[in-house]
Image: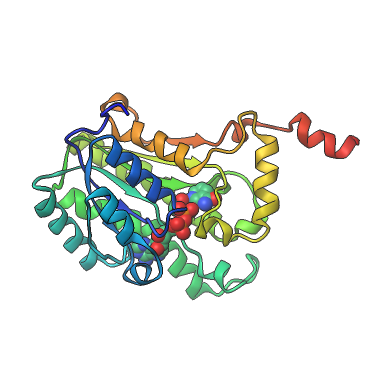
Amino acid sequence: MYNLLKGKKGIIFGALDSNSIAWKVAERAHEEGAEFVLTNAPIAMRMGTINELAEKTGSQIIPADATSMEDIENLVEKSTEILGGKIDFVLHSIGMSVNVRKGKHYTDPKYDFTTKGWDVSAVSFHKVMNVLYNKNAMNEWGSIVALTYMAAQRVFPDYNDMADNKAYLESIARSFGYFFGRDHKVRVNTISQSPTATTAGQGVKGFDGFIKYAEEMSPLGNATALECADYTISLFSDLTKKVTLQNLFHDGGFSNMGVSTKIMDHFTE
Ligand code: NAI
């Protein structure tokens, strides 16, 4: 361990269970010397095992529905109290599509579900940054990261409306990131992660086949949740102070591939 986050304070959204990417980020942030507050939707508190993570990392939990401005305001106020100062890093690790959950096809969604999905998966990021920005709750040279997926740029048919939600999320990172950088010297980036076997990941139809395909397509293989956490820690650290407004691919090289020999072998055997 490198003490990369020694003395830094953060808020981590989205740790549901030990498979969650946010869970690994919390464990790694703790190892690197950070103090942080854990948060998740009230319902996730009942479903998941976040208490175990809180105990392990000496953190407090503040429930917040990331679509509720009231909840986020309460979260940010309490977090600065608990941590005894402004925030240095924030992880947004939240995604959910009601259309996916209810088995609605992309070509014929229920638009109420579409609206709920983009509110949870994209606009929540705007709301979180709104509160942090307007309460002046971030320290200078702080870092905000959200997790995304390459379906924002390329077609993955079964990713459904999450593709649109991720495109929206990535755009918010750039647009809000400009104001956050200009006014508070805070950087905002998205990490575009490989398919990863988590609750959200496995909700995507055909996930098992897809994760194998991505593995064989990527020269370095799929990036794991722990590797994603390592990358996230680097973005929270002082080693990446001038990286902002970026969508950063963390995918073993998948995003720049056309085809790999391993994939070709399936067609030439
Ligand atoms: P996960 O299911 O462990 O995490 C998703 C989290 O979103 C859960 O903790 C859930 O409680 C939280 N959430 C849902 N609605 C919420 C709300 N209204 N307010 C607050 N929190 C809410 O799955 P995972 O994979 O760790 O997902 C984290 C992020 O990584 C998501 O943005 C996801 O889209 C992204 N991602 C995941 C990939 C994968 O294959 N698993 C690939 C690329 C990106």
